[in-house]
Image (cartoon, rainbow, N blue to C red; front, side, top):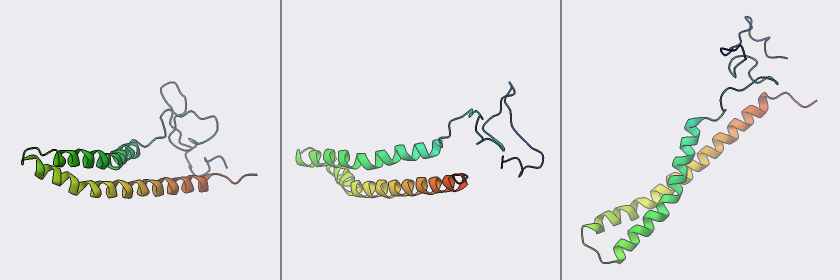
Length: 120
């Protein structure tokens, strides 16, 4: 099946030079050019946020502990305690998001694999 049987009007998008784009029926056909990356920018942003949520609690905890142990002014202590209090929650949120993104990628992989024709 070429993929055109589902579309009764045989719609294909082309760019200004007449080359087929990566949209519409037949986009995944061999020989078709992809004009854009197939990377979801929102998922990339989520991975960046997850990296920050997983790494920052260790640095925050270290800095807060140093400020508490250094005997600095009393105004700094409430901020340090606040960071120490929120560091475990940030780490938990990072781990939960990491697992969520892994499950999302697994679901996408399974869905894409189910779309592929069986090997002959």
